[in-house]
Length: 166
Image 1: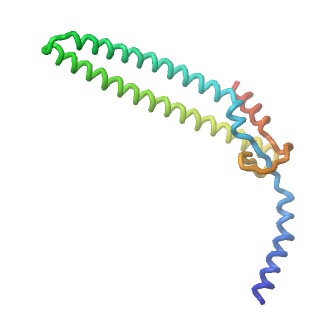
Image 2: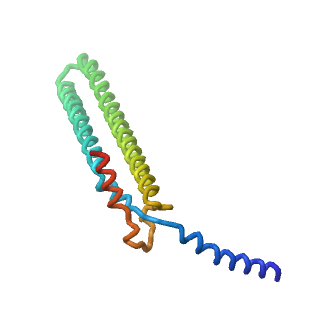
Image 3: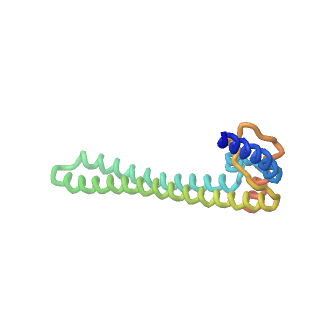
């Protein structure tokens, strides 16, 4: 019985105190996907990586052509000469594999570094915005089931990021 009374007292106290704390809570939300879609630096970074990938692909295609040429020549050679050309072909194939692996790893690393840099900038802008507008919390709207549109700070964040990027 004492436990029940104690529990009821605690619940009634919490229900009385909790709204007092909630009155001072200022929340906002941001659509992070939309921020990433509309932030010009993201588009520029993607374009830069695509250009670099195209350049690397041009080099790769050159290696592939060399390999095809060597294979064609190999078919026409005598046994003695074939062995030497086969070693050359094997080395070119290894070079192609190494180039492909290194290129993919390099582009993946650059993409990840750029993404981390952009996410840090977004986080910094969100912190500054939240602090200057007296928000206690700004959350991504992905899991919000209901939201008041007045609490959406997405466009303000996008404008700030793009203005800073210029």
